[in-house]
Amino acid sequence: MPFALINLIIRKMQPRYNIKYIQFLCLIIIIGTFACKPKGNSSSFKAQDVSIIPFSKDEKDFGKEISPFIQGLFDAVDTTKKLEIGNNIKIKSADFVKDIYAANGFKSLWFVDSGLNGRGLNLMEYYENSPKIGLNNSFYHIEKIKLWIDSISTNLNGEEKNIKIAQTDIALTNAFLQTTKHLHFGIIDYKYDVINYNFDSIQRIFVTEEVKHLVDKTPKEIFDESEPQIVHYQQLKSALINFVAQNDIKPSDLRIRDFKKDSLGAMEDVRKALIFHKYLNSNIQITDSVNFLGAFKKFQKDHNLKADALPGENTIYALTVDNYDKFQSIILSLDKWRSLNKTPWPKECIFVNIPSFELWYLKNDSLERKHNVVVGKTTNQTPEINSKLENIVLLPSWSVPQSIIKKEMMGKIKAGTLRGYKVTRHKNGWIQVVQPPGKGNSLGVIKFNFKNDHSVYIHDTPSKSLFSNDYRAYSHGCVRLKDPVDFGAFILTKQQTDTTIITEDSLRKVINRGNSKIVPITTDIQIYIRYITAMVDYQGKLNIYKDIYKKENDLIDRLFNNYDSSWIKSSTNP
Image 1: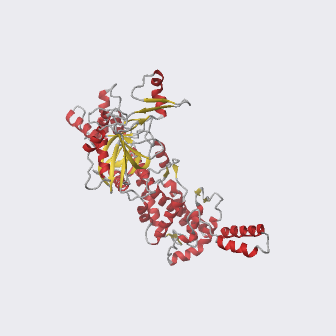
Image 2: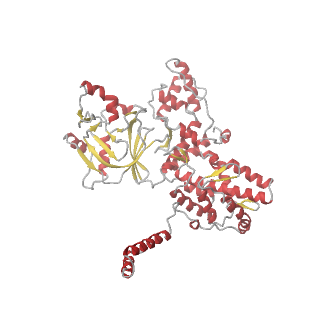
Image 3: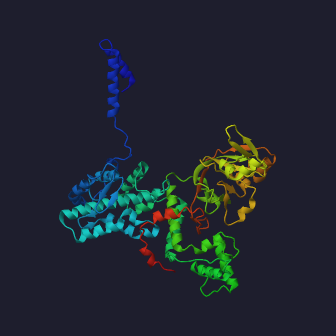
């Protein structure tokens, strides 16, 4: 109620009534007004938001018969918005599933009297092949649904049959909704590292729109369109399909003996692994040094390893990872790309992939620059971050984090032998350590700042030799960049006019003057620091990287819990 109207009421009533009584009456009116105002729906979804699916005559006739049974099942939705149907199929966010049905008069979405309708047949056909693209059908109760469908067509009649159809229909709808959500937003909730079964408001809005497409599209078409359209995801998905078609996916027992203890045995194991990975013919022996060592070095080069024909730690990993391991890594990596699908992919961004030790500058899905990086060691892991480049600092100082002071510097501080740093002791006992700017500074001569909760940034380093190693996890968590001044000049050209060109030489002149400087970044450049172990590079090559932080085993166990791998037996080598 407008407050001007309230004031008018007070003026009219004041001669006859006590002012406090009038104010109290107005308060009641205000409360009533807001109480009667329609409240926003926390799920951002109402039944009427979904267009009615145009059922065929057979579907309409059958719907009249089955709808009371479907609606009756939803009467059992509990206060936690869960519904258990049949034999232990538990549906979370059952209120959302109910709204989908309510919008369609609680008619069956997947059945006619004779059995599955066209939508239902297409949906089940999709699940026949879905394990090959990494979907775990146990998340959607597909095997149990198959048994229910068989029992409907063979063993049941009358009301018992109608109840089972209603149960199966709801289970199929839940499977469709869950799959659509998983393919778009990701199967795993990476905040808690659990399978995501509930629907938040954004997911409900998205899936509601996809339900509307059942009017003119098959479930498979909807699933395909729900997946991220990011080029990196699509390339990895294509690589997965080719990988499954061209390789034997069965797990193997590849291993490499200790080269220091048994060099000949280790090399024989390398030979077997090279044959497995199709780099060597089975008739080539280790004594044929030209062909054997040539194949060994090519394998190392193809896997971004030092081509020295020696079975070092990273080479052993690359040789012993089998095709099932690779398959699982690809599946998890696809799901990580889905988790980035909540916001539109930017036109330009800096993309750092921790396991590949690389930084990419991407523009319109094209690679403009690629730099080697050094990332955090296993005890100081580089975190995954989504942020935005804020500024570039020339000749930065380094405020040493307290964790490094306590673990690595305290002894020298107490002994008075810490050189090249400014140590400040505060009255409360807190010690501050700062390394002044200079070429010997741990951050080098240039730093790239972006907001994050981990005090992490991209920077130069005086330790240049590490960039030539194939394993590059040595930092305290920050990302050290090869050729950072060149990269800084490249970034600055992004926000200059055509008459002012920043080059590496001109930037070095500024640095050589010896004055620290902060250069703000006005261009919108997003930064992604991610941990993805399967990537397709810009030459179209599928790369599988070592899980250097051992972060993926638990996630893979969740994705593949009760996974049906029976299809793998039919995989063949070309």
